[in-house]
Image 1 (cartoon, rainbow, N blue to C red):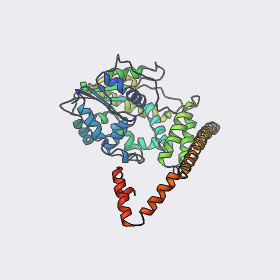
Image 2 (image 1 turned 180 degrees about the vertical axis):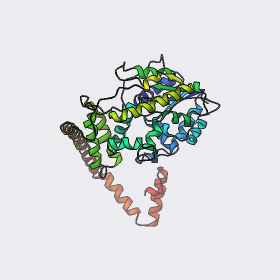
Image 3 (image 1 turned 90 degrees about the vertical axis):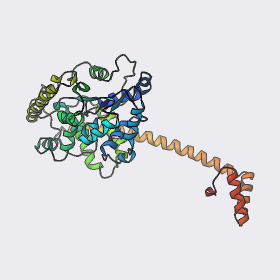
Image 4 (image 1 turned 180 degrees about the horizontal axis):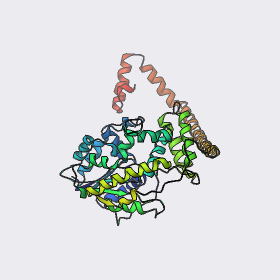
Length: 405
């Protein structure tokens, strides 16, 4: 059984994609030092989380049956330290969290809960954009209205607060853990050294001093206002005709992550001034609660409050973007699709040529006298019962089942 388990349960948009990419690509090196990141594919922990939470996710839920139990079993079989990480675990109910902890060996195993957190002023626009990148058509204004509704029951609100309301997440996950085993990793404000967040993760997971490859291969980059507006309009047109397995590589990966995210000169998504004060007040109440509970903080809780507000003149409404900027983003998107289509046309032509070569080779083999003789013998044997019996005996002797006759 694992001596220690570090269970990272979120929150989304806090550097989780980079963290998980580093852990996955370095899992061999980590294991040499007694640290298990059990994953046979980069999204293994995501599938396990879907299984635990019993969530529907564009058909992927069909792939994940039994994945949590498989992950937990591998963790229990490891004698050193194990790391599990995925941000959607934040939305687990208390019953699901209890099941997860017990399956990892709690209370016999030393389980630590890790929660990475970022200020709401940045989290709210980032979550709306993430919704858009997952095919949503909801406007920013309506998104904000649903979040601020006191019932928190409309549209996206249950999901958002399930993965973002920090004290509530800890109520569900950390109720049975001592505060010294609950670690809050704060995301530093913009403008600091780019490796500060990784250093905090590294210290929390006990990875300091290990020679790891930190180059990012997978990330979840942000988009600007016109780019997100373009993607939302595309969703409205494409959702009915483009299935999720096609949408993910073409729209989310090629257009959003690889193309539109490179347009860094576009205005950034921000909270409107009239929402900023509400978000700040909520954050301040969360920070007060977290200080009282005495959790281990890696970073500074003050980083969750005090984010500067934009002025009314500086705010750019993504529901009413500059149309020239949207058109320019659309040209970049079309160009990327044309280039990708050219690559696919070349790949298709290459496959067609290889298929033609294979067909010609088969035709040549059919024309050989020995093949024609064997084919004539088989046809003759199939005409009577004794011949069929002889064929079956022959194929059994060659290790083939009679079903292939």
